[in-house]
Image (cartoon, rainbow, N blue to C red; front, side, top):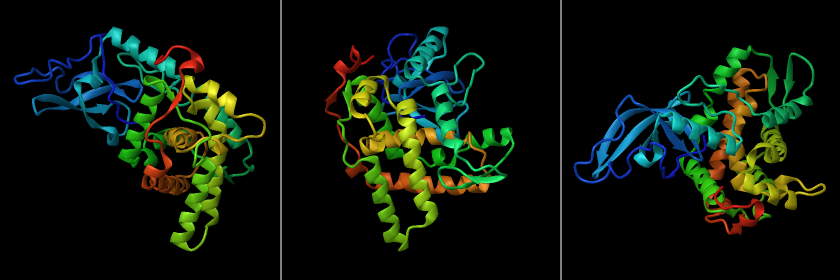
Length: 324
């Protein structure tokens, strides 16, 4: 899930944005009611746990079904839709448009596939070079070992990385989605700093803090760069960005030498999913997630320097109609 969205719903049995405002306004959703909630560009099945009237406007505390409770949040009525057949169809349309195969479909049994076909290709390539044996190292430089499938699935749903995802970076993800999909803007390329430069700055940051670069830290940044280069065209681009990618990435040019923090942040949302496909002992997985979380906090600390406050590239000519 990419962060909170200010998406305004319209039609399709939406919740009652106007009815929720003003003195004496009636509540549109009841406590315990199952709903569909916008989170970034997509709709997720959720349950209203609390309602509260703040300054003559009703707010709803929702839990996203199947997600860690750390994603629970207060939302306005324009983020919610009634759980109807029409809105379930809308949920499916949004899921298909985004290419995301992991959204749980409301009102029916979820055909929940942890990875889209493109994701699986990335995982396969990233784990292809692992050394044979009971224990081995993956491309993020951490020893891995065979574990039961059910344990792997359990841990992926309890990701340390996602449970501690900084709130300001969640907002950054939402802004990123709105710039590209709603306003028809693209990140102007090449970015400065690039992903390569950001990871180099992170290593320099660790040297100042620790007076040395640990081998594991260097391996993690190297592996993260490799993941980014392979994952970007497969799962990190919106449809509007595909043409730009083909124009910018030619020959031996790596995406990490062209793209910046905006697209690197998208990778962090996908990482728990990618890592769940790699057989890894729980202790090693936790250590790896701690290192990745440290990089995420480094992005947050330098958010004003690493991220664009506005996108000024126009995607109108990239793939047709704006806002599609």
